[in-house]
Image (cartoon, rainbow over the protein chains, first blue to last red):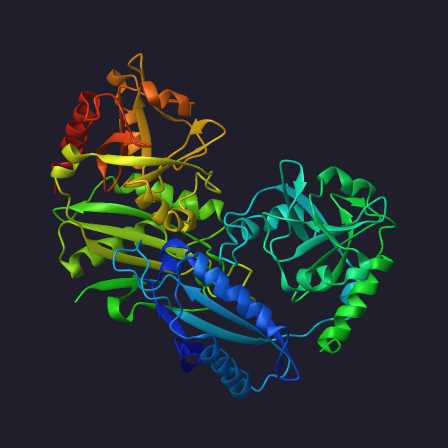
Length: 272
Length: 272
């Protein structure tokens, strides 16, 4: 049996429920964050908690539990579920609104699921299809993935694995990952703004010897890019082999992606 | 005690819950519709059900109950709650997703709340503040009101009652209502597309003697408009007296709004 936590109480997952007056159900209003554990230890937890409380604050959601109490709850959940390698999601919703519109006391929902990283996924890479779209409130990790899920048939029709958003000629992000390119002249670039700033992206921006740039990345630069890859907590570094059916560089994982991947695995202590 | 219906089962509202794996909570994925009852009878029900099933279809959500069964459930809910004048909300979510991303069997949630229309609200009118925003999937009644709720402090700061979205110089809609203007030359106009097409809007477009136009409405036309008003199931016709602090026409409810309001009340059988 697996357990979840609702507002501080540990409950079996099969009984982890909220009233349908919750603003996430009524109005799609909520934020979350997601981190991994390795050998029972959270990976980059402080960065995820920083972002969680930032998202909550921007959306005017005040979690009842403070950071220390939240860390304690997370440790309890990891302990009771006994899954050393897992993904943990902390969701904070608009709460049980009296009128279905006004914010109420937020509901804090914490769930855990086993996570297995497939080491073959780096070599396989992924194919992207582009789509003109700008996420609303892009720098907040809201629960809004309406567009991404709506686009699933579009992605399949284009024989792609995921979608790459762009707008006004600028590359933005994938629905659940940041995007990076090694441009024609060898510069390592990730879009600077109007995106969700990922924790893995932050780690790479800290690798100063690679001279990573957070900058404007024109969509037109992709056709001449040497490499492209996406980064996220679950995908770590995943090479992008094709965009809109055309190969990026050699159409195979590139050396910059590989070097960053290996370095990140070192920071996280290996695959899993 | 008030009751709700979850997937065909009548439950007390205090026990009307869904698992937190539901895609509305996980990914903000769901649609709904909302209609009113008067003296226990649904108002414009067929139009609302048309739109409900259309929204469901676009979002690839197949409700388990067909239209006849749904109408039967609605009648049961009205009967058991015993509220002759009410608002009923039918929500359809992405369901209990195994991986938190892929659509599952949708959950159908029906709730009822008493509704009282205040006849003084027509004479009072409302003030709007404009904001550059385009709703995603605008012609589907999704549960996404993230932006609208996020903007509540912005609305208050501008001493307004609600926000009017526009983009690329074109007026769109309010978060929960359609917008209409009587232009400088006396034409009755509502934005044509990239909006949610309301049932009240449809009724007004059917009033041929008023020559209503669904057309491009430039934001710049508002400063010279004779009248403006918004329409919705709950607001019926509510005059807009000010936009961005400036009066529309006389700054008081206008004759076209009043004529349409009276005619709609006749179609609905009065206030309540």
